[in-house]
Image 1 (cartoon, rainbow, N blue to C red):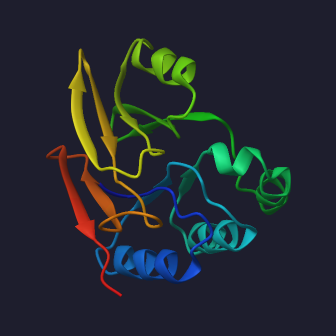
Image 2: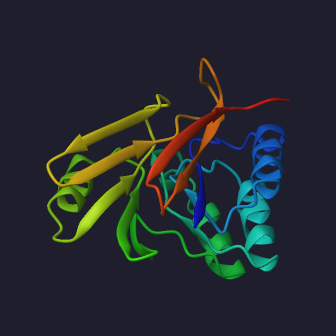
Length: 166
């Protein structure tokens, strides 16, 4: 299974549309957004992916917490946003969080069975093993030296960060 991972879009529609278009050409079987969606328009773009048959898991970031309308809008569409999410990806237990709450991150790292934590917030790509858990951060689509997204192959457990081409 190929997973597309986005983070820190901060309402940048042009870059988010470009990344989602690139993910469609792969094609991905799941999309994860690691928070700081930044606008209702980004929620709509993710919801459209879900409506087209691609499951979407998204969490709130610190920017989203300041705008409860984004959270309410996502819930209304059927794309609930929470602080953390846990999902099964081909038998791998993965978690998603934005990364701005140290306690949430620590709790996920200490959750039995969680092998991967997808995170964002720093705008810096990261692939790091801490104990039994791998932390993967795709970097950001907005306010990043090199905007980009990532792909994760559950079969090979290969992580590929891709710079965004506009």
